[in-house]
Length: 300
Image (tube, rainbow, N blue to C red; front, side):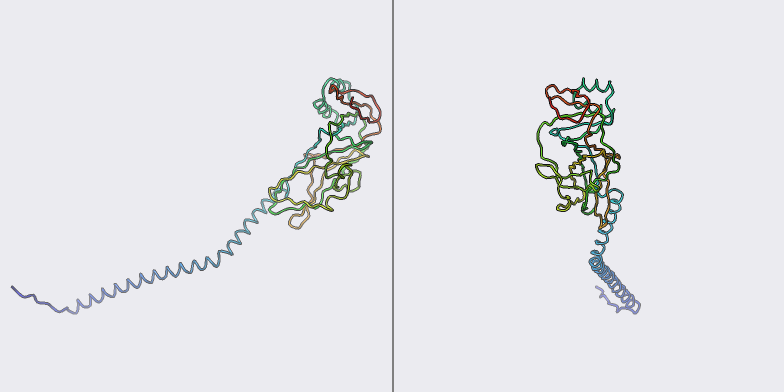
């Protein structure tokens, strides 16, 4: 068998092997460097995020608040709705500026209570009220409120602004007696006052007391609903009036006007004499004529 002869490496082969070792070493270093750079970058990004994120969160919250404020400015800080609100337990009156025509009177005497009064009111412009005795009448209004501002809105004042005063309506007088008793409402306006601020109502007597906001506060938050019953009274005049609510929005006062769907509320005192009077009989539910004269209270 022939012996195998081992040939020592030649210079070219040694150089090739050295180049391969260098290439592998460089590749390892490059990979290690890339990994290290990526790792350091990730660490730096986390550190930067931890440093910047709170500030960014604050900026985001402020941006959201600014957007909410912008949306809120496009609508009133408090949404309002109002309507006349009478209770069946009250002695009610319907007062008109003129006497009924013969056709209206015939329809009244042939018909029954509410449907005829509503129809007559539409034809003759009558005003519904609550009989308060002597020359006094009450007008009851229910206000529905809803908070629409991003922060709570304090209501610092409520008043009635009378825009027009005339003598009481003295044409036709309709009277319906009370069907029961009920506690008086808490807030009231005296429309005969120069400045008709909201006042408390005395329990039992129903008389007006101190200014409501002297001892009470009222604040409405976002999406918070609230109903307020208001009773206005007058013993001297026919009045056309609206409700003014003073609000504190971002430490600035705003006045919100509440009316009857774009029209003023209307109230009238009892007149000394009426051209025609009627009362609702409790026995048969029919209207009965009483002729002309001063206002009267009858139930038979």
